[in-house]
Length: 170
Length: 201
Image (cartoon, rainbow over all chains, first blue to last red; front, side, top):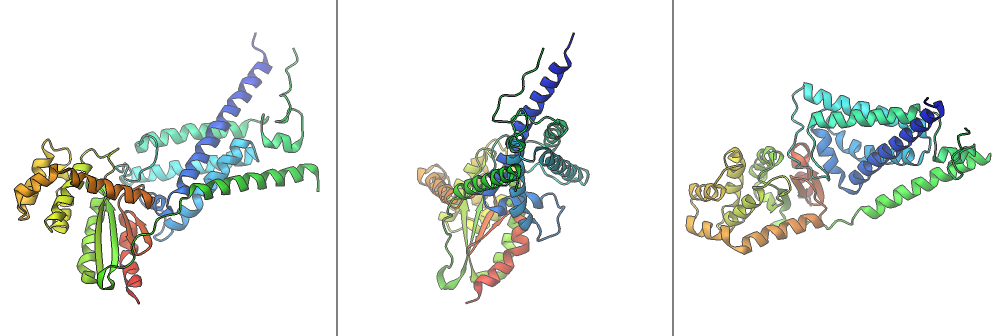
């Protein structure tokens, strides 16, 4: 017979894995953009034809910092739920931006002329990836019990990050 | 202030410091491109990849700028083939070096973009380049020999190395004076304005 505590344990582990994964993705994404000239990210943003002319460069200077901080905060479990919710919001906006580009017939499958690391994904593949990340963000937000997080340590409650996770009594 | 509040502020500040520090370390000091050419002309540097559709899109704006400003601008083309995604770009870059040797870089550069659909993916890309050279009145034999000359390939490597020192990751990337523009839209919106600005004494 399955133990509800086992289920909670699996849920916690999934949420923790999800938090680490999505935190790392956004941290890396923000960092890569920040160490490159902002004009390059601005050029990628221009391709979506969403922002008014002249807004792309200011956006390109600011947005990666948001990604970097949210990624780091989620990774470390600092303001975990709020940051996971914010990341979910960002992902919804990315999916929306990509979707509107597809609907308007904007060719986003650029040649990779914007450099970058890793494999080049087609717009449908990017949307799929973002949906997976959105699922992870929601999982992290929904998990009430933030194991191994700065929030736990800050609150100094039971099962804080610097103590052993509470054992499951049998 | 409660202990939790102190921990909250402290850890937040520590995280922020680490992140800002990491970004500062990661941002390289960029080399400076040249500012002025002979006669005080504004130096307009283009790093591009002949197989890149975005570069093709920008080529019209580059032509318009060069036609409009004439001698006020010194156009400098640098090859930056993105070989990871463009298998024919390096060969095209080498051919451009050969066109430059015969003083025909600009018309050849424009022709390569105009006919990008024809030579990209072509079975005999070198043969096509030699034909283009002939169409532009170049010495076909010298052009063909140049394509095979290791010095031509070295010239491309030198441009790529220089581009990396300037922290270039994408094409097309332009420099007007010290101003960097990436992509065709930025050139379209800001190129002429920046040249006018840099032209002022």
